[in-house]
Length: 282
Length: 330
Image 1: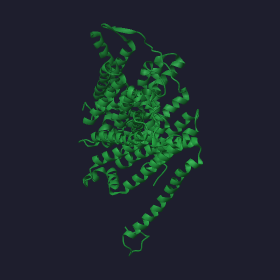
Image 2: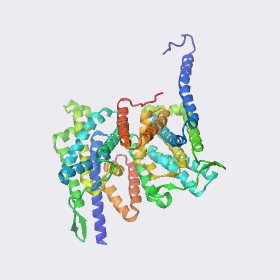
Image 3: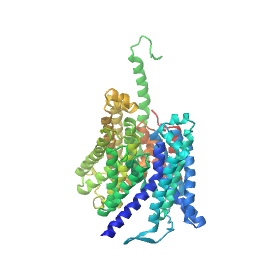
Image 4: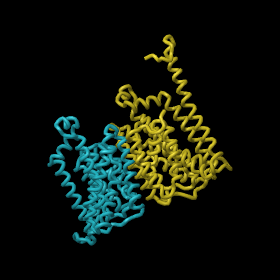
């Protein structure tokens, strides 16, 4: 019994950290720019293909993890300069345009890599014993990595000059500009960082899923819910959202058919959004 | 402001009347051409094309309902395909239990009510509260709602057929001895319904209610100031759009099967693409966009599909950036 409970707790933690990892890039772009990036799922997927590519060339998974944020960040650079920047006053059109960006990335990947499925070998197979339970090392590593990325992001936003500029721009764009902050540049930085984080998340997730051009879409709705349930623009909220959705999913999945559990948690998220449109942790 | 067309002593309505005549002339001609094309299509096209066209008409109706939502409520649903799916599943499930003419009419009625009712239920929660959930948040919520419905349809396989969808249900019948099989009967029904709904919407949007809706969308603060209940208006438009999408889904059923893909993000994305590329705020733009793009996609089959979709994505970006109103303008 204790073993089951312990497994469920670690499962919940693992899923929460995975959801937070996936939602990070979305949260940065939404929180700092107010832009809902519907291409997020496809940037995430592109990160997986960066690993497929790097592993094919060098044979080493970790090169892929290094390459993914660079490649996907570069895609983000182009998207911000070419698309997002011009739609600042039209948030609904930004959604539609980024939907188009997503299609382009997805079909581009299909052209380059084919529509078939790929497998990325787990670089750290094997398990560690936690008390009476053996748990896969890689999933435990992901929990630690997600925590470190969160800490790094918080340090960047709250302890460095670029982070300060971004927060100033978020608070008051015009006043920030009057103080010599270039809001266009700051927006570009935020978008590229968000895209790079999506790519990194894809790279780290690639050993755990079957990689295919449509893989990102499965996570999109849940990633959105993690961001909005917790509260847009707050890293703490993101963690809370991840724990609610991930924990709820694991808990409900213990009692219900997993598909229905998935649906039930999304219903919960919509209900939370209805009663606390600003998010739960505000 | 006086118009140059009217003599200075003419009553103030004269210029307006003349203007209206001209506008009427402009709008009657393309409508008549379209009507003629829709009527003539089954006589000039092959059976295969008529079958395709029937499906595309239902897609067109769906895109029209999404455009209604955007134009009169300022809302874009990113899961609008789910309402189409609701309508299709409702009719298919009804026909499974009650075959024949009665089941067909009941199913259509239920499809409209389930689509409209579900939108009303969701809308009452989103629009009537102290803090309205609109704009981009409405987009996320509809996206999530479609994902929820898809999960439920996949998970509840004893009722919905799960990931296989539903097939083998009774053929819908319009009257004893008039089943919706082959190509002509389903086409006739779909075309008639599309024309009736389009005409009805055009009429309703010119009424004072339709104009108040437009006012509410264009300047919500001012509209609220003169006493227009925006939340209730959005609820009304969302319910109407949901009901029309449900009817469109039911019209799709003569194809012979319904699948959970109708609830998927990809299908809902298509609906947005049709509406945006066809032209927003016109009703007919999305309708024509759906038909035109679907035909093009069918024509470019095989390995071309990926390239076609890539082009659609690029077009979507370009149209939103430089040509936000799309191809058809009125």
